[in-house]
Amino acid sequence: MAGNKTFSMIKPDAVAEGNTGAILKMIEDAGFKIVAMKKTLLTKERAGQFYEVHKERPFYEDLRSYMSSGPIVALILEKENAVADFRKLIGATDPAKAEEGTIRKLFAKSIEANAVHGSDADETAENEGSFFFSHTERF
Ligand code: CMP
Image (cartoon, rainbow, N blue to C red; front, side):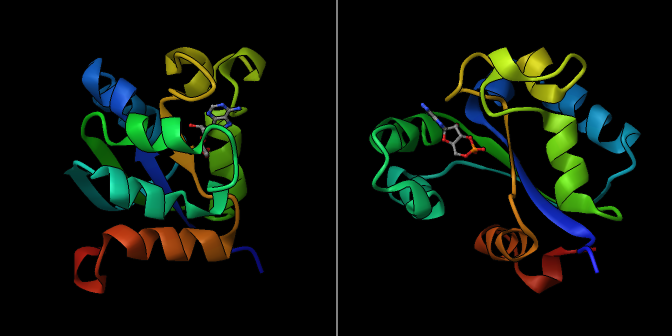
């Protein structure tokens, strides 16, 4: 059975440019319920922990710096088939390859500053949600 929750972050570039509201509207219009939401600033260390799976990648250092360069908005989202449907809504990691009408096509600046994050699997979604939210912060 497909899980019904995913985790997302609105990244520093999108928050700084005032795109938080527009992105949240697209998320809600696509049928996702916002279960938890928090605006926060990651330290470089915490950004590194969040993206630990990428620590051998050449972009890891840059990614840590970028993700701690300004506040982000963390979200737990609920919908049937949430992980796959959300990845469809945000589009490809590289905005040059993202489909028309996707969040990244509309708001991403580059493959790194790509406006939003979306979990890649149900188990990742659970772990990433728990990185930011306690169970008393989910409604
Ligand atoms: P995200 O989906 O949050 O997962 C890992 C992030 O690393 C990705 O979005 C981008 O922000 C960044 N990233 C992935 N690939 C590259 C790349 N080739 N160069 C720079 N940053 C990347």
